[in-house]
Image (cartoon, rainbow, N blue to C red; front, side, top):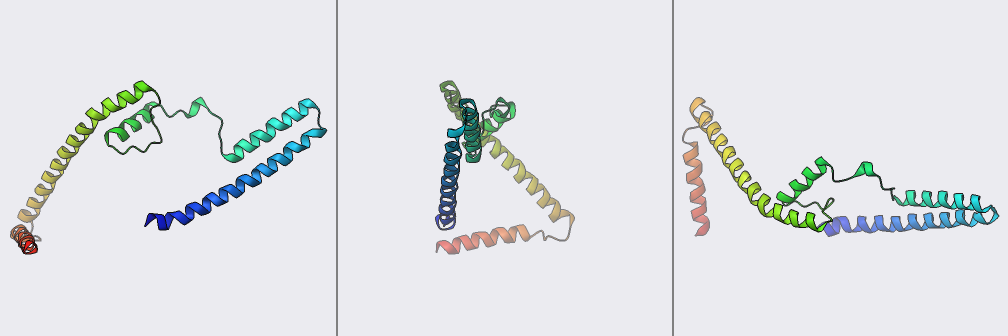
Length: 163
């Protein structure tokens, strides 16, 4: 289903990107060929400027220490993707120590996260049961026998479906 929906669009985007890059390459080559009539310093500056424009048009950004992934919040995000087993992959450890610690953290964090979810689910179930009992006792909107009827109906349908 996703192949049929997303496949043609991806192919279109790739073809468009190939055409744009070919045009960019041709334009850059043309600009670099104008270097012949310049002094060496002018040619150098022109080449550097042209190649910088080429890199920018490709979408390649200059590295900057202001855009690091491993900040405090980036580390929190990474640890959450590990123990929730989401694993988006846009931030990953590169060092051997980081990878080993990720494995150890996952061995401990995943079971703790599952136990927390189970406890939270139990708390939510108790809250729903409390609200249900409040609705059946305090108001005439819900019949007191509704719960018994729903459960009996469920078991009857379940029994009939096995026959």
